[in-house]
Length: 165
Length: 413
Image (cartoon, rainbow over all chains, first blue to last red; front, side, top):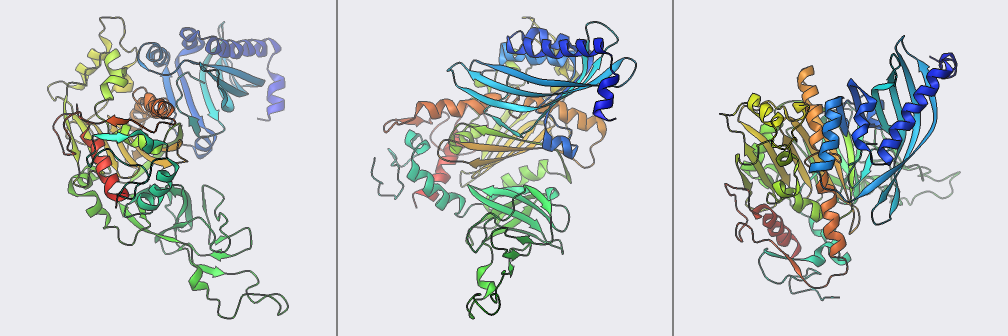
């Protein structure tokens, strides 16, 4: 579907709700409210971090891959209780959001992101950039991600990827 | 600056053994330069890529040996070749893409062209223009081929060596290590994904880390936190005679089947436990009960099997205090959908975001930052003795000592 046509036929109210969901997503991560992060996904969902190179080649592996909200909660509890990493946080900058019709109960959305990583030492770096490719359940309020594929522009990650993108 | 000791190595060692490792080895520029000479260009074999990554005639792939850019290419007749990605004329990079398919390689700078075996096939304006200029009459193309590496294929893995005197690859590995590679690489492989981790440390700190069976249950708390009881299993380490290669493995107790593990993972006295245990839901695909096998080949290759998560890791030095870890996540061509899904889920355990490996991306940097500018002091490697031998337990640093044994044999020569 042509992106411009697709975007224009999605109801304004739907687009505002999609925007809210995406804004909420970056807020819970950047404000370190990770416990709320899984709630933005449907119970059965797909969350994948891949690179543009792998995505274009059709490779299925993700640096992080979850297909249930339970797996997302496990990711958060591992970060809180098990994994060891230096204190750090992210600042997400998300560009304009394309919303496209998908089905009666779902829409697709695409948005560009830039993530800065701020270490406890004060060192700040561009950690990742890329595209969120979403499928969103609009049948209930609040909207939830059925699928969020995080396609990073680069296949390289500095040191480690602890906090989700 | 410390003077080179009698061995010729820029950094001197406090003793002839390998239980005390000078910190300057991680930060000395002369040492780093010499490592390229004696290790990466020396009588060693470096991992290049998988044969399945260059499957068709004309396929090429750019990789590295140490910091040297290397091309692996398959000719029209199906032969594999490896050569330095550097024009014989003025030294420009030849292949500017990571992968592709081509009839031949032409340098963008002055148009010198090469076949996929690395032979010089054409020189632009070789006879000059309008009878003026051109190469001298005694110029012979065959004197100016690309710098070629020896290449060997073993179980679908391609390794290269700059040194004509390096022993053949299987002798280099030794029988035990070769058998442990064959065990995992049991059939045609399939690439599931790729990712690269930038490590803020000298390459040796990562290679030591991956050989270090002592730290595993201390730094990586995922299994213990979630009370997944895999730590008191039987296991051990194998170190080859040279010391440079190793295997660390653990065997699952067959009395405890996977359903029990699942229950164990779910059961929780502290309200920990996983909600979704599919990430640790492995099957015994090799039929020997070994659920974890980490294998290294000196100087920078890792073959990993964690449950059903299989990956190749290629360690590349990028300056004294930087390195890259190139991950290739794998399955087998005959995997069914359920097996692929299992591998993809278990891949959460490893890689830059791996539950049981993310710490390894940072811990080398902790050492690198702490040893900056240090002229004195050495690290200690006394756990499990002073030898670099195979042992039937993992509370040992024998494999790390093995690394230094091989390292010193090459560097102190």
